[in-house]
Image (tube, rainbow over all chains, first blue to last red):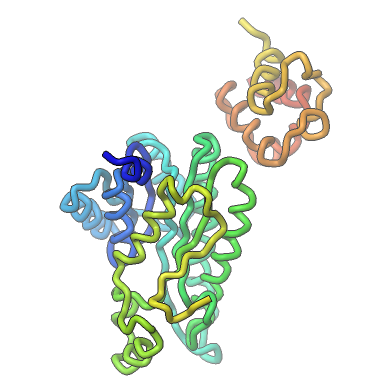
Length: 254
Length: 77
């Protein structure tokens, strides 16, 4: 093994990826596993968890799927305890689980606002807090939050989603400052338009319009987001913290 | 068998990187021993492990000196 490969190796580490049954989360789980981590992927349903277990096995990755509701602190505590007992405490956390409830502001219901905030933002608080004890003890940790290009650009009909994702980026920077002394890095990855179930539902017309704004002229692949996450989790990325890595085909250059 | 006081001081020394002989019962973790807010949280974690107890956050915030830690452990053994 070359030195570079050794450094990128996540052997012996346990990674926890929320929302891993499909799309970007699934690709991240496989990528971290490919780098040697034991991966726990979570889904809201038992069938989703089962799918993750099978997907990881097919990819030759050690780990399993588990059912988890990121809006429920008890569910989080229970799952964390099981993982810690069976595989060891996670020191890599990828907060990927998220939903959309799009609506223009004048029609947006309070439930639509609240559910997106709870699932996409408050969940990050809950998950991070639950994992920090083990990370500070280990004097090593990686928290990677999956944001979105809309956190910086905004998007019509997504005031709730954009607010949650922008909140996530502020959270990322604050936590990075709090935990730097314990060798825990906290970063975000902000995907542009990626070919997943979440973007599949957009009208064809809107997709074409969006692609026109991407210099690379296509949607991104989930694997291209996973590669960025894998890098941030790796040893060579040890000096990067509080950063948001933009992976968007150039649609939002900063 | 070490006394509770000795065990507490040993943990404080390890966690905060100070010499045991520098630690007085009246020593404040932050004022005298140079702990920051994260150090005090980790100190409580270490005490929880050593004495196999769970210290609720409201209680943990009141433990600011060596003596207070010893008192807490004595009261919850």
